[in-house]
Image (cartoon, rainbow, N blue to C red; front, top):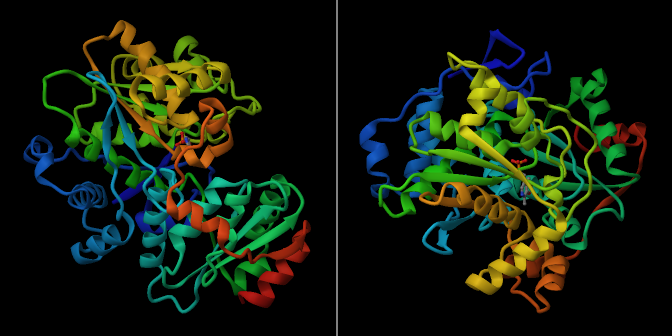
Length: 439
Ligand SMILES: *Cc1c(COP(=O)(O)O)cnc(C)c1O
């Protein structure tokens, strides 16, 4: 497998380089040079394959033998080890539950697969890989759980003191072993600036093998395409067109869906669902892409004003002949945006109509699918439910006016003891700590 940068298609990287570096030097994004079509026999018989067999087949097709079969099977077994069930709401609407992993959000798939690939590619190196991440809440939890006990890796997570929720903090600070949480006396921006400086510091990089668990690492995108196949397999075969509705922020999930489609999965159309941070729906409408600062909303994991995967979306559509990139994208994706008032009403609506508790991100997806199906009534739509509603407990309980169920793996966290290293928000303090602890 070879990958190019969206900013320079001539300069190719190996999978190992792309996974360990995360970003090309030119600040583009890595994209697979070839997205192979899967065999028709496989696509027509998905129900004969387990989720892990599907994941193996998709990954192997993309990797093109870079990772030997037994190693790749082990990587899949260790990472894709919780289900992605489809739940039916009605004749037309289905929910794909992506929250059955340790941090109760779809990011677990990407974080776990990335951890396994990094550990695999670091084999034979004398020094451990030190993964440095700044988090404002959710990403850190998925990364911590994903790398927990992964051989050859140490994870150092910086988070802003007092600015993450109690449960988010517990996800970062209670695992121990190869996971260390640094509680920074500052903001998320301070944490991010400290991490950036660490990657640029020659002395640190000489003595420590530093890498990032960046959300745009290609190894986080690839496993997100697996569950589109897994979802399709669970739908009735009734000849109706299938559309996927993706609650989106940085558009990694939607990009992964488009890769699944290019590999031959018969997805008729995508729906990009956003909150009021609607730069992509706006682009689909007008052809103009205007990134801007984000606005805080109820579906806060989608509060993104400059979606990082937009460059990949453009890249996927510009190669197609006969039309502009914008036209190509519009034909394949419809965009819809909703306010918090509408989102709250949708959480209540799904509960009263179907007895299903949907989280605010999924609720934005529900609204978008409804809007699309007004003009496309004969389709069946799958909403990606990106997180468990109990991750947004206060909001969801306030909307529904009653308590909701909290899964045991989340409840247990509240009882665990926090362990974190308190650090002033200065790079010098981080550097000193890293040299003392990790070198
Ligand atoms: C990260 C996240 C999203 C946004 O996903 P993208 O791939 O960035 O578009 C949506 N919902 C939840 C719950 C998330 O954590």
